[in-house]
Amino acid sequence: MTADILTPQELKKAAPVFGQLSFSDHEQIVFCNDKDTGLKAIIGIHNTVLGPALGGTRMWNYVTEWDALNDVLRLSRGMSFKSAITGLNLGGGKAVIIGDAKTQKTPELMKRFGEFVHSLGGKYITAEDVGMETADMDLVREVTPYVTGISKSKGGAGNPSPVTAYGVFMGMKAASKYTFGSEHLEGRTVLVQGIGHVGEVLVEYITNEGGKVIISDINEARLEEVSKKYGAEIYRGDDVYSIPMDIYAPCALGATINDHTAHKLQARIIAGAANNQLADEKIHGAILQQRGIVYAPDFLINAGGIINVYAELENYGREEIICKTENIYDTTLEILEKAHTTSVTTHEAALKIALERIEVRKNENK
Ligand code: NAD
Image 1 (cartoon, rainbow, N blue to C red):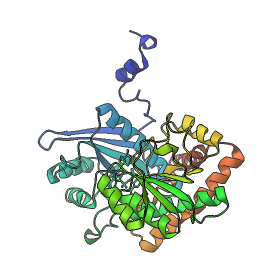
Image 2 (cartoon, helix red, strand yellow):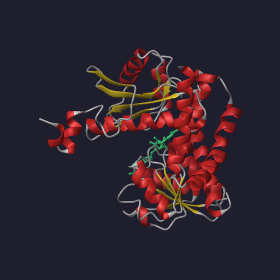
Image 3 (cartoon, protein in one colour):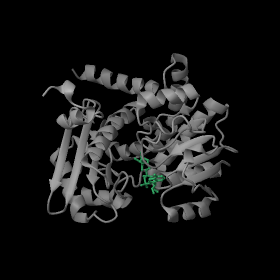
Image 4 (cartoon, rainbow, N blue to C red):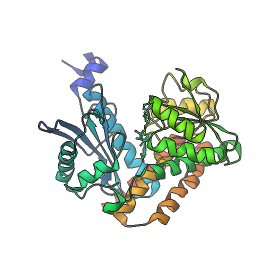
């Protein structure tokens, strides 16, 4: 049996880890299993050149284990670039727990997960992501010090989501300055897709500045609640990418810029919190560039959360968290301009800066 007679799908199965499309020279991938608590998790450590791999834990009811592996590979890689471009001394890592956070998450499962994190001796430091709450990180803290995003009452920096939202807002304003000549969002129509921990706070910032917000979510109760609170318009149709808007803010899950959406999206700017917004960085990044849609790279503008949790490791306070998060405005503007002058996509321009920082440190460490 030779590789050239296998179909791409067979090939993927024949080389399940190093042959994955999303495998990108990851340093270590750890599969965690515990029968008693039902824990099935994967920890992905992408790169530790700049420091320990820090990244949140996502609990999601993945359709297949392939989806879970693919997600952890993509997310952990993104974390390396996020920390690098933000100037933090952290590597990139992420964890996924396979299961329904509403029905399968128990204190025992979270603690068992914490023990697996602990067994890595600090090479991976966890935090919260989709499906996790600050209280879950507090449980992990009972069994390992290698966790951030714990409650303020327990010495942590608390929920990172409001800081993430502030950083996204900064990136959105920078993209507006670049595109429209003004950073002010007054009169702009912004679609916020996903109004969870980050999305709701973003809705608040935009509304306070006089922007018109349209919200979409799969959770009907959240739609009603957030609409009532901020006067946002609810979109309930089935073609959210075709509605007229100035700015699209993806704040649910990744890969929403894909073969089905990249050509029809009606926005001038994309600036949101979700990780890995481009299903394919090269293909979809290029389509956006050709269509003149300004894409504020996700790993750059959603770094507020990691800035917030990094404060727990470096012992810096609120003022520095805000200052570092506000820097996202200048960095975004710089990258959008650089992409334009060098004729590359905005994603490529940001990636280049992140990769250069990792490479410089790698050479220094030799
Ligand atoms: P969350 O779970 O609190 O909110 C996600 C929201 O998206 C929920 O309201 C959910 O109902 C909605 N949603 C799910 N699928 C949807 C769909 N198909 N269409 C519309 N809405 C949908 O998560 P969060 O903490 O607000 O994070 C949002 C995104 O930002 C995630 O991709 C996360 O990885 C990323 N992110 C979050 C942080 C942070 O600090 N929380 C930091 C960086 C990146």
